[in-house]
Length: 413
Image (cartoon, rainbow, N blue to C red):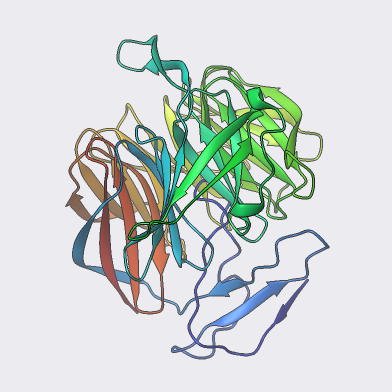
């Protein structure tokens, strides 16, 4: 199943998507040197992702060091690192753009700006439709060795693929009604590029995009359609993916995690009190796991534990994926939104929206212990993590002020 490459200079791991199942990490491997990384490479079939899974040095504690504040764009909704952590993508809902950050320099190196067209949005406080624009990025997923960035557009009832390695060779608007124009700006340069991307219809108000490990299938949670779209990808044929199944769920869906080990996907039913379990062989719902109300975001470790944020309750929980039993919970600051696991699955990072707080919990065998609460102004909503052998960085985007806070932690044995 797996083979090892020789010990190489420092590299590190990142999962396929912020909201997808995380890559196999440090399970069943012997780490022989505290100063190097060993690389585990799966034997992929043709067309599968070939980026190696990289194992950082072990650590058991983290110590907060500093915070940096970066400018993004209005209404930054989510952030996503590529697998080697060299680049971070920020989805700017109100800015109708995606920013590509360089991790070492903290600078924006590309801005993918959508051409706005009139559409219908949603006022979540008044619970009613409002005039808006279609091209409002919500969440994203990287696939095919980080060659394609899939972005959900809040008011366009679908997702778009951005071919990051060939933006100048994308085909023109094959179907003007089902394509979106993007202009790429390069800060500090007069250069710019324009191209069209296909709009792949999924459902009303698409949110999370997740993928299987081989990048053959995508799953999209459609907030107002009460369903999950399953798309089969084909990056060699425009529009690069097509819907092959639509799975109804009981109420508003949001978070999705794909577990390739069990061949199942789990969907947080934010409008109810359950997690829908999907069979990835037949793409049908198997059952619902009863949980507390208003589950928003979910992530998963390699031992069959699902971690969930409960937005209204102000809690996070650890759930056994097989039985649905809640193993332990912890209270958080108000409105926990996105959650993210560290690469060793020992720490859970939580953005707490209305309380302007980021919290970190250590995951123990029988419970959570709070590590730190950090002030993060502007309503933090999205988070992703960069790691190397000495430090961990939590990149947190704030919605109301369009900023990204980088919280740096020192790793300790």
